[in-house]
Amino acid sequence: MATSSANVTRIMLAMEESTISGYPHASISSRGAFEWTIQKFVRSNVSSFELLILHVPHAQFYCKGRACVVLGFFSLCVIILFVFVTEVMVYSFDMFFSAGSEDIDKIYTSPECFQSMVFRGWERGVHLLEYFVTRCNQIGVACQAWIKLGDPKTVICREAKRIQPDLLVLGSRALSPAYLILDISVSEYCLKHAECPVVRIKRRADEAPSIPFYD
Amino acid sequence: MATSSANVTRIMLAMEESTISGYPHASISSRGAFEWTIQKFVRSNVSSFELLILHVPHAQFYCKGRACVVLGFFSLCVIILFVFVTEVMVYSFDMFFSAGSEDIDKIYTSPECFQSMVFRGWERGVHLLEYFVTRCNQIGVACQAWIKLGDPKTVICREAKRIQPDLLVLGSRALSPAYLILDISVSEYCLKHAECPVVRIKRRADEAPSIPFYD
Image (cartoon, rainbow over the protein chains, first blue to last red):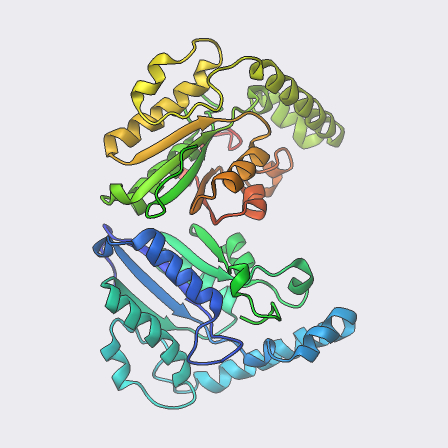
């Protein structure tokens, strides 16, 4: 990642894919966090900010399936098995995609960067970044976007430590504790462990889908 | 509190008095949170922001006294008694000062507002606000400052709910868990309970006094 001017406020955003419509769409809470940052802080002062946009691909099967949600509520054994299987699959997922992917660790700063990307299944994560990079270019604010593989919450904290942004902005589904049993909240983890100021932007109630776990 | 333009980003800051030098000085972490807000967000775009500065007087005896800190570490019984006595004294403190104080609920927006204040022991909390209001006026950013009595963490959350700022900024001593046994962190509580985005600005390690509990 290129070194930025110390005179610019560097805001890091971690974007998730939509669990409703999938790639290349970003989750409702990710889009909310992005718009909040633009509207509340960047405003018209675009030359004083730089947005650092990270996407950590999330194993899709982790969130899909109403059956998993229902079963998870009533069986501790299923939860333990679920978490175990998920961790194994996330690991496999990482191994599969990390083999020879030129798109990882590449820094995207303008819509033109996406024209040279390698096309395959992996491209969808890149397309998610393309949406935000294009938005930043339209607004006129500088940005850098990149993809990292691994467990989202630990990767976000590791990247925040490496990059040392002035602020880390995270979208949140604002799930009730009952749902959190099934998922370790990424934003909750980052609030505790990230070595920079963190702000969590909760999804508006009127934006939440009928199954709150989806985003 | 006067209604502000919806086109302005409203940042609420909760300021504590210094536990080292007392009133009218603000704590190290409060001053850090204020400067962070000015340097990282307001920047030169002063017309787009409004700072809402709240001070909730804290019972001084709660933090003073090395003996309390040391004893507290080694005796669970002392901790329980300490917390109980503190709550009673905070309550008495509120009752004492809330009787006929014209400075409470008054909104301070410029250095001139402080010229008409009522002089008594209570004035010191107002002088703490005066420092920040004067700084805001020097910078050119709009501000409103006020005092509320009660338990700081619950008052801050209640005021945030009432005012609905775009962001609540809180300074934090960044205490280790060992110290947190003796004190329920205000910022920790607000992160969980405030109904608006919250960011906690941790005190820099090189600013921390030899007794980290002090601020």
